[in-house]
Amino acid sequence: MTNSYKGKEKEMGGKFGLIGTITYDRISYESRPSWEGVGGILYQGGVLCSLGKKVFLYTNLGQELVSDVEKIIKKWPKLQRKGINHIPGPGNQVLLHYPESEERVEILRSVVPPLDPIIVIKDLPEFEMLILILNSGYDIELRDWRKIVCSASCPIWIDIHSLPLSKELNVPRKYMPLPDWEKWVERVTFIQANEKEMASILGHPEKEPSKADMLHFGERTFDLGTKAVFITLGKEGVLVMSPEGSKKICSFRVNKVVDTTGCGDVFCAGTAAGLVEGMDPFEAAAFGLKLATKAVTARGIEETYIEVS
Image (cartoon, rainbow, N blue to C red; front, top):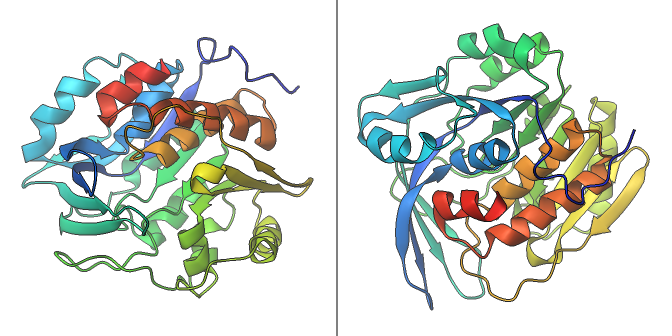
């Protein structure tokens, strides 16, 4: 049965597995104040918790970030911490710069090692959905991801995100072709990517993909077991593709943009939650965009959590 997304924010329940990286972001703009704080997978975790989901979080967390992270997640009673593995060092440190009219510049200063899949595999029977967010591109090894996918019986969501980005430290990251993308998405239920990530998947990161390119990609993924693909289009909204058809869902109007960091993450969490509640992909995407629109009026994890709650 398909549910309406209107008024559903307070009614959702369920259990989610969430794999990704907690980052510490230093963010600068040409015409807005700079700011810094923890981010990454905490955006999805916070939104899912605010929607009443019980969230099992799996990540390697640098010891120097533990205090900052605990100040935030102690307010999220739905978050399960046993999958947070503390490791020595500064954690995943990122510099992000947003030019006025160009692609954002991302520089990795330090990273954490890939996640061990064993604890995730043990908990898989608990989940109504499993989500992998490739925040850094170092999050998990492909061979370990395949072990998880092959062990899972629940729907799986993957956000390609940083996977196509070059892995050098202390230099601007560049989009690279992603020839092994099929191995990452085979038997995955839902796929999320933006236009630049889609261009990398198609083998031409310098070329903007056409709608026909994206629709062809969708057809290829359906043969691999995917039920829906979500291509985020920035302020234009999202292109949703499923075996039943494709549709562009337009963004909601917002009066003032404060910060766009994490908006794709909020969309992911809202849409995934909607899907678990029985919405079809198009309705779920509209719900996810509704939350992402709220998120652009906030800055950082704590403000975003409050805004979407």
